[in-house]
Image (cartoon, rainbow, N blue to C red; front, side):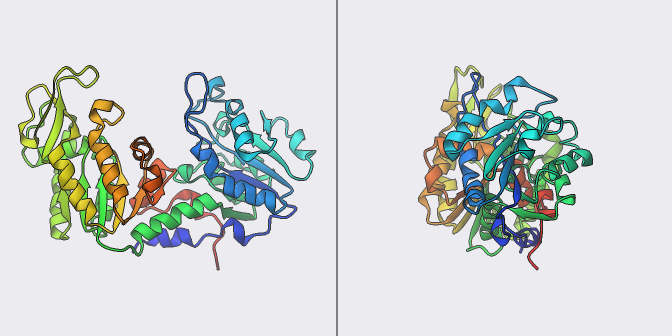
Length: 402
């Protein structure tokens, strides 16, 4: 069904190569959230990388070099240094790890390493050329390894030196176990799924989901639309959404998506009632109103109870569910009910469920349903581009199964 999924499933994994006595460089994703005191608030991404790292340790790799980014620095940024996370990595891995501040200027520690040593390079985005896929930086990285393992799904939609450029200069390049698990999960949901398939989509903007909706509309049976993006669809149907967030430039596109869905016999579910407020940051007046009756000066901030029941029924009658985007401003407790109820509804089904996107994964976690979702993707933008039908750059140059 999805040629991009098939193509990416065809890449070699770590199990297809012999790492014994080899220098292995693993591009992992340790882009973990931290508070102002640099305390890690969620170490799930570190834990997700353990399978790949431990496999290399258990199969006697000569040395392991870990490469990751943290945040979006422009040059060196003390707050985004990996020295803030290395202790957590050591604790989770139960191994000593050496942080290399500047592997270009001084990689003597790596060159003189003993068998089994593990190194963590300083935030790769501190180095000029990483995000522009600079070849000289890619060559420097390639010199550190015999085998390149990409296990960073969250950055595989970016053509950077540490994800794509390096593959030009390393003979053996394969996918790590997390990367393979991600692609296999999406394949199960979209390549040969058990029908009916339901796409639950939310978030703030229609503009960020246009390609997704246009690509997936012929592959699903129903689409549930919530979040602020539903305001644009409702306005395209003639509803006055008053002060609600609406993308007026995308009203025509919203109408076309609805028409295309009808043409393909895809049922689209939109909010029939919404939670509105007079002030998002400092609400005084909060009401539940029919979607066509938003009050002057008020904004829609969550789906209402009638909508929750409607969406729950659509979700409950599905055998495969893909969820991307919250139903409202769930970060604010008073506007989180709709999103959490949808998380509960998905978790309560016997369907195969996959959650893509950082906000959506966070919402499922906050709702206490993280363990009851079939698969939660570690990549936001990457999962979105996968659903849009694109082949992720991080997969393109990896070795293929012949």
